[in-house]
Image (cartoon, rainbow, N blue to C red; front, top):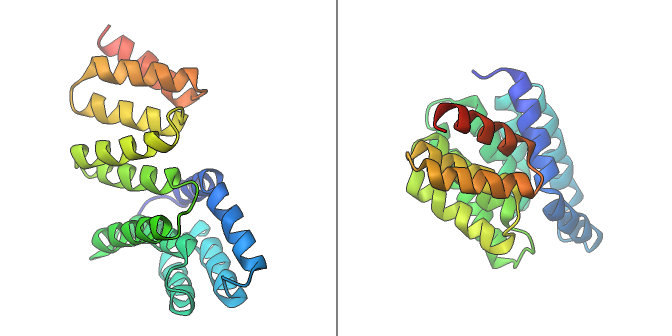
Amino acid sequence: MKAPLVVVLAVSLAVATYGSIEADEARDRWQDRIPSEAYKLNEEGALLARQGQYDASIAKFEQALKIKPDYIAALFNVGLARDFREGKGDQQAAEAAFRKAIEVGEAQSVRDLVPLYNTLGWFLHLRGRLEEAKDWYKKALKIDPKSPRVLNNLGAVHEWSGDREAARGLYKEAVDAGSEKARDNLKRLQRVAP
């Protein structure tokens, strides 16, 4: 099991990158599209996940999804919780949840799908499914060509694939877009392969 700090950082990252979708959901709550009970369950699940209580958080997210099966934040969050829990079948269920969140987001014409595409890309990237990850990162960059996080992640995929030149170029673009992580990756890459 990963350390709870990792969960806190990942959930914080998800909230930071998922802001525009949360803003859409705030608007939807105002318009009564997300029942308050589903919203409350999703929030409780997020709190439990930050505390490392994955089983309980997954149960909350799944309850929210019973109320509103197309609740993007709950789909995204149950995917994250399953990814961090790392139990039997969790990886497949996490991937399915991320893909369902994307499907719903696309069907609902959500304005900013970059966080969803990037998350699925990262999920695939960490599992060595590099070509699939590249495809999702490229899809994200079609929406936001200057996304520092996506540029950095695409650079990392190229680095993992052995294409250091492409990685270097993407890291430079990410640095220009404001990514400190890409700056660190670029420095490390230059030390390893000048």
